[in-house]
Image: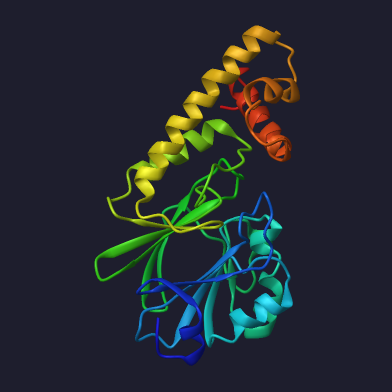
Length: 260
């Protein structure tokens, strides 16, 4: 990404995508939130995806890269979306998301929608599961594409699930992406092939679902998510047991017929 001095200070991942890492590391955000900036080499403006928290030093760095044409949000969680109103006020860029309440001076995203910005072609995929309003966004240029995955796919480990049935559908949809579509993740490193990682995620989810089902049979039908976690996630760091409970609840809802 060239053409503006500030771009040279960013970490370029593909010829059209660079990332600014927010300084908010944690067990949930990994190294921090990845704020993506996309543009073709000839474009005068860029698209910003997931500006992160209302973290002014981080947002100022993003704003200083030059003209921002559009701000996209992959979902409503504050580590992705909270800073969007500040950045929109600072730059005048519209904000788009699937959730209408997050949008500013623009209409909501819709599943399957295509549009062009910053010299790139974009297509929106509604990918619920992590949250109901999660989207992945395909960005294409010169016959190649990358997928902005938000928290639907992470660069390392697995994501927290709110609704398992839709998430399994999301993973099956991502498996259909063309081979070599780079995953530009919301947290952690980028991945070389979104379909391969989605296939791994699906296998992992099926394995965990089988483990939770076996634990439920062992503990009894009224077992709590915490009891399931203590059995199934015994080898996982206890600092991750609380988010594991959220995913187990989604699995229990699915198994009990409430998550479809």
